[in-house]
Image (tube, rainbow, N blue to C red; front, side, top):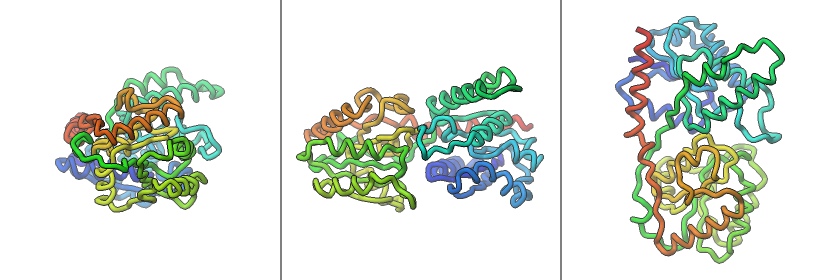
Length: 360
């Protein structure tokens, strides 16, 4: 079966998913087109123009299935390259354009939402990486349609609900549970998220400021960095240095070094205002880390109450408690093997076969 995979905003998590599919499911013949994860507004609206004219010959080749991420302007692309309209098509949602935090940094245009709506309508199946992602997309779409002045057909949300399902991005790695590793102070805490406002650096700073200064910690802040960074990061680094807690600082681009850092750490912390799946946390837990995550977003789907906090004060209390538990050697990382490639890979293969066969 020949699959054409389109990833027009190929951010790190998208690229990991894409390469994972190609490596883990070699029974399919993969052709991949990607575009860099930059110039968001242009990329989400312009990918159909870029590909429709520059890659037309490749797009018109013989395929059995089209798999595109939700950043793809699928409706326009199918109009520019009619051969694509004859292919069974799956649209994969790593995120949706309705659930980003309301801040000055958010993309305020309704255009990305409309692109994803039209793409969803012309796809045969919609796949979301979490129930949270699916639910916020459908609810956000319903809210948007209610605000439009006229000419809105009935049943749009129902139509998309019926053809949607959840299949997470599989997790790489399977380390030893924390209880089987030596835990000698200082306790290793990792914060492995993008250095952007939506990952809650102000909450990370506030939590670190409120932690007892005597705690035996080493904190590793190792997410992906960008040219423009929130102002909290220099303050976080200064505080960690002052208290002797500073560990690795900055993006670990080397995959082996990154995997080793996760394997050597005891706790993984999220302060995110939004995570549609929380793949960075899941990968750290697969390496043996105990998670401490918000009691919202996608996290209740993955972790029990012991690993979640409801507000900043509970974050500080639970983080202190988990550090004490580490020192006493009483921690157990939850099992995330359900979301491993070995378990989810066959589900992806069955999905692709199911839809690919619809093309005859």
